[in-house]
Length: 144
Image (cartoon, rainbow, N blue to C red; front, top):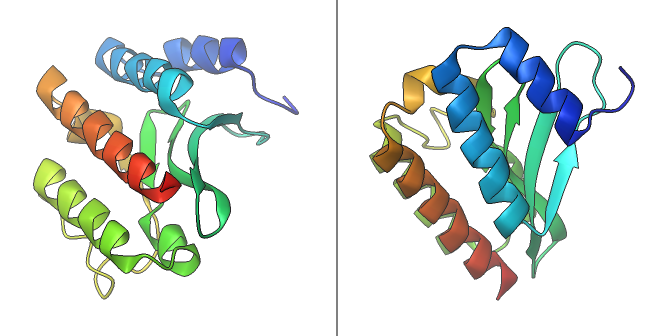
C-alpha cells in the first residue's frame, strides 16, 4: 500500500486490533478531523499512520501525535523540542502527558519519541477526553 487513506486505515485497524483499541483510535481520528489543522495519512508499507498536525507560530505545521494501525500512539514531544521556541508550551505538554499517563517525559529520560500501546494508556473515556483536551490546549497555544 503506497498511500494510506481514512478508509484503508480504519479497515486495517479493525482487522488488526482489539475492539477497545479500535474505539479509542476512532475517537482520536474523529477528534483529529475536527480539531487538527492537517490530518496526515502515512505512506508506509508495514503499517498505517494518522498524524495530528497543527499550525505553529514558530515553525509552520508541526505534528503533535500519531497513531498506527497496529494499535500504538506516539507523542512527538522530542520532535517538538527541536522545532518550537516557546519552551513553556512544551513544558506544559510534558506535564499534562505525565499527569495523564503517569509516565516520565523529561528530556533526560525520554530522549527519543517512542510508541506506546493504546490499550496500556487509555482505559477509560475520561483518560481519552483529558488527552484530547491537552492536545487542544497545546494546539491553541502554538497557533497564537
